[in-house]
Length: 221
Ligand SMILES: [Zn+2]
Ligand SMILES: [Zn+2]
Ligand SMILES: [Zn+2]
Image: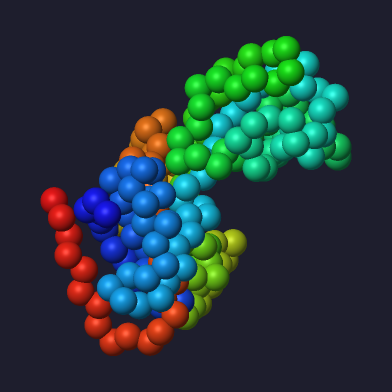
């Protein structure tokens, strides 16, 4: 067996290991093994890190349902049509966000007789509504009490706040929700980079069927 190049190994909360490999080929090789340093393991692709999102737009797909798109488009495992609010109603647009089962979306996709351009999907940075920091949701916040989005102090909400704006993320004189906050712009730039360049590595999860206290892995450069 040839050498596997592990670029990063992270222990997950579940006790499983997440292993990043240099290529999909390497990931396939690791996927074929049943033991790892004499420990029985199950190797499977990481669900969310190996998928990517792209945006298509076409009037011709107007009559297609989301289910039909998942069935008809190859490599697509989820489709979400963008809806916009018009007064009380929500109306469907010609824009669809597709989830691909590859780390990077294709640049084009065939839909029957059509060939559609796929644009990278850039999500909005996720800000925690509890601690106001970026990168996690309120359910995973380490802060016990919510802080005010306007001044960063706890014990009240923005509606009742008359303090000077203070951003907990950059310490600037604006609310943490500001779209001109340098921290927001940085987060957005990272998400845009990821969307346009995709993941460079293939991640797999190694499920260990035995309790071990230490595991030493050799990293081959
Ligand atoms: Zn938080
Ligand atoms: Zn406040
Ligand atoms: Zn800020």
